[in-house]
Image (tube, rainbow over all chains, first blue to last red; front, side, top):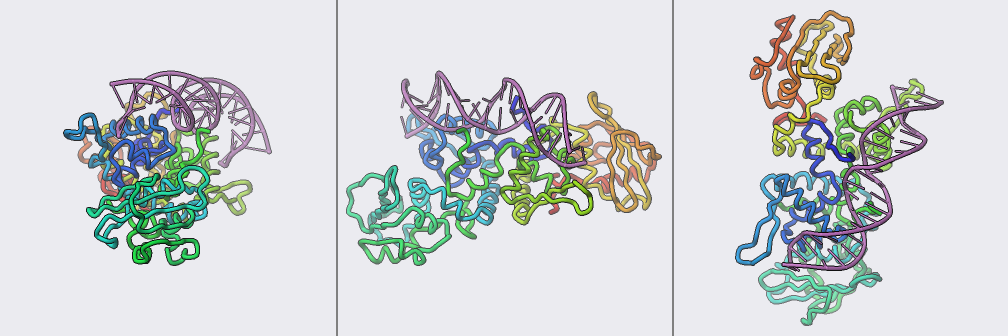
Length: 230
Length: 230
DNA sequence: CAGTATCCTATCCGATACTG
DNA sequence: CAGTATCGGATAGGATACTG
């Protein structure tokens, strides 16, 4: 049997048995970040197969880390939530993030570029406050994407909801941001600023929105010396 | 390819790629705890095959977490040490330990009993201070061990070095401790005290040493609400 | 003591397709 | 939308023996 457990009484070993399995930590990261629906979780771990995601969620449920429950009066829909013990894993995820942030060379970070994942992450942390108090549409065009969508639209509703599309939603675009995935990822990860990167970004549209990009964009929870908001 | 990496730019993913592989975290735990020689490490992860341990150490070396170096004027002998980035993993190990300590039911802990591993751990944290200032030999006899050694000797030298034997080293025994593995593990993990367990422990020999057992024994670094000493 | 070498298989996991 | 079913291949890793 390839997997018989560590057979150690040490709590570190116990935890490792649960967490140190492929994808598991990333699934938990997604849950910590706030995703709760199956397909939302999927978007956070696009390279993971749905069957494996399903399996992992079940394992986490068995371990009492995740609770799966029906959404009231939404027939057949379910959501996954962290239990108290799951929420107690936040320090573990934070420790991972902090260490990776400090010690994995940023070059490596910038080798795992993925525009759709980036946009999905950005959507989550976007801060609508600096934006006009009306529907605002920001279009991103990545010049260097060869496969898959190269254009994305963030639709920020007045109430603060943010939608992400990879096909034109048809609204008037307030600001168009043309750049490359590497530049945008570096900014998002706190490795560079919008200002630093001004030679690799072109704006078209509302100058005011462009000027405050560093503000409304927010940063990855794991950007340099930032902490994960629980 | 079963293992292509997560292909995510997130630092959590980077760290997970390195750490979330079978046995890796436990090897790091051993290094953090102070083991540096191959065979010492082995004793800390007895169920791990030497080839796999060797492989993991190489991987950790490649990731810059571990440094392997020859021991000066000890021809052919090597030791493994954590690099600065490796030492920065202490918070990760701590977070694992804390979570496991809090959330994995202690019943499970007490199902993974292993007397030799327990003794090896105890040896490491034993505090010689409360003991007489001369060689002190404490013998443990585990009544419930059916396979493998059931007797162990801790030989505490005046300078503070502690040796562990599973065959009689021949010295006079100052204190004999007769108990069962479960009781001893519970004490070591902070789930019980020597006093609590007095009906399951018998002493023979120096009453003074017996009386201070809770002191010289020390506790697991992961015992209830204890922190890992870096 | 400190590892290597070899072998072999269980199982993990990726890919894809499909369903209520 | 939210998963399940099925399949096959790669490989991780367990067991064991061996070596300088």
